[in-house]
Image (tube, rainbow, N blue to C red; front, side):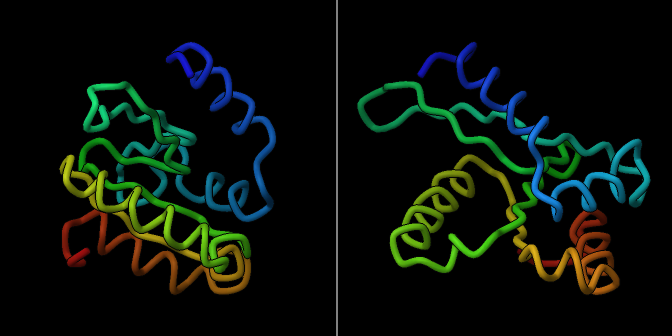
Length: 128
């Protein structure tokens, strides 16, 4: 997939957020959380071992902390998806990114816990 195609795909994801993503975005947009700039559906490029360009789309991303925030739905509990997520995280961590994950349910039902963990991660106080 080309960069332009993945960028368009990310735009479409922004327009079709899950309810948890919409609530998360409302809480963090415009530097509302710890004064940090957070982007949504952020495209990250990497090269695989054959030198081919590949892309990941992070649900949310804070460049200042190189922090990726993933909001996981039920599909992430499936074995195949868990394996893909592990490989993806390994690649992103090797590139210097930190990753924090929250479930849809946590965002929708326990924002206080999400807020505390996210602020700690954004302020560099949470070891990821």
